[in-house]
Image (cartoon, rainbow, N blue to C red; front, top):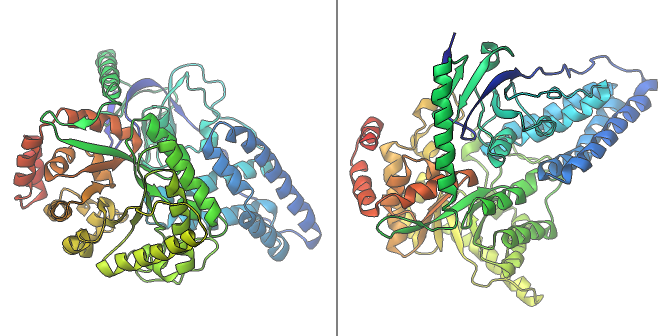
Length: 561
């Protein structure tokens, strides 16, 4: 019998169909037995052998993918090794159990993070742990071996090591129960243009390998066991979508200019050099958000000035257009394995972001010096996160000035006119927007946190998730306030939250006067196409009317007209 399931959000758009392939997870539960003192050395040797094998495999895979280069770093991480060794030698735990507990501890740290993109990096740790555990348990099977017909993979989750074993001649799409839009399977699916849904809770219990699936990641539906008439309808939809996508991409080299001549910039949000390369391929005109915290999160110590300089230099040389680097945005619930944070009752409002940078001045200066040095190679800009006052911005810029003076003394080149701006993501920043606009070079509105703070809604709390909505009149009016304040003092205003690529939000933001839209690289082509078919004057009128509405329902009703 045909069944249709509606899904809230697609990780990667497209329309495909094929037999269901329900992935069976191997049992990787650790042996729970304790070991004798005399067995410690043998267990440690087992672990070292499993790591050695994993490292050898990852070195081969890393030649073709930076994801596996990151996994290689994890596999060779001394923090991982030291913890396992300690559990074996001090707690008499066997190698499997020591590994399982260590991985769980590190994963818990990552999964507690506020930033979704960073939170999804827990998958890296899990995947490396799984690879080493397979070595310890002698498991070498590839569940995707032997597929020779079109299938839609249905799984609890998919790690990079899973997708590395797939034959994409036959694997047409993914449906996973876990993961978010920034998880590896989502990123990989978008980069390979494979339609995918992630976070579809309990879906595996609804299908077997005997079922046939239509995955419509455009209309956001999954159809199980469609009849022939339905299949034909979706074959036509797939062909139409493919033609439309080709039309979108044919405009990659064209500006995002409305029918009446208003031009805006389309930038990309990135967290790695791989992301930068993808942004270039997708027609990004710059990087609106470079998440520098990855250099800290994926390290065993605070990254050196040289390590950061190398990363920032490569980013600007790859992009060849503006790169906006957000300074370290970490703290509170965003922990580092090598730095002890005090426990806080409310980490969302705690010691984080610019507050940490201003307190840990040496760490901040190391980052600023690296950014300044890289600025000699192109248009790099600095963006301070979680700013709530002019005082904070001026304090950060004073430290930047110290770094400039040090580099001058050492005759190290840098861009003396480097632009500095702030993320607008707190109610205080909105209310002080005019004051900030007098002293900054640019604004970037972070709608993810701004919505959360304005509405007093924890977006991670499922009980109240329905209240988290960027179309709330308060959020829309706040965005307009910031844009108007920036323009009053001739400052460019951008946006780097998910709202920037929402097809219903784009006309409103355009009408409000937003100058730069920064988004996932995969969304750039469709957003460019949309903007090139909009009329700026009409969008201005729409934005004016929208901001007069009192409820979300009224806003949505107007958008549907």
